[in-house]
Length: 311
Image (tube, rainbow, N blue to C red; front, side, top):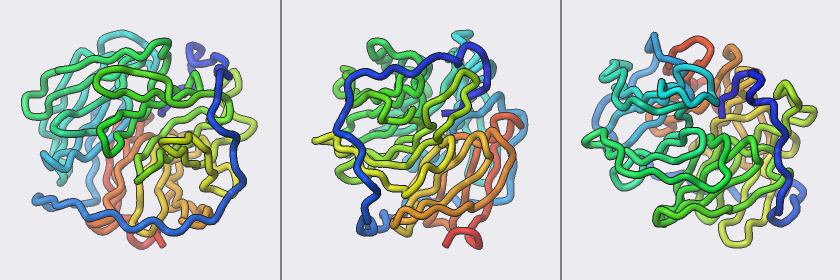
């Protein structure tokens, strides 16, 4: 997610039915390094795209070879029609500032089979990448603040509702509740990995969206929904999550403005310090550990070479 401290967001998380109780941190065998994406265009770091309008998520669609940026362009919970998606080249060139318009407060982005999926408050929207036309809309029942999403190997779309502490599953255009409850810790960033869904949690928020206990990184088994902690301790007010090539993950802490490496053994270390407002990022490990992040408060998207910082 990527939240502003505004009154409309100061609502209580629900505590409905739940998956299996949390398990203590368990040593996990390192995940095999994922296959390197085959990208023709050269990827560069050291660039910044200015004049983004409250950018929340930046995502690389490997099929087209372009980066897509969700722009809230207003308040993150407002149905104002100002939201839009930008299209950016891998060299930082702005291809189309208004690739898709007429959204409300778009956030998470993922693509599957030629469709770019984006969360937009209480619905999930599918966009044909070739034509830039909206082709699908799914509105999960009861959704309030849909945030990040991930797509499983069978095409199931998993969507985090941070405000409700709930995760939806969308299959064949139909939405259902995958898991919910306080033990999900305000799920935000999602990543589909093998037989499990990996979650970067915000933590249960107070009225000003601060947290007494910040969120962990954990996994939910697709079949049993069993929760397994992947970090030994709470990590932060987590937003984005992407896999690294070392069996771990790179996550962002929105409030602290830090990019954090989570090792396969559950340890954490800060990779790079930024200003608060660090949202849903892209991490390109196969191209030399390039971190591409949206700076929500600064209205920019920037690419950084962090190869010297990731261990």
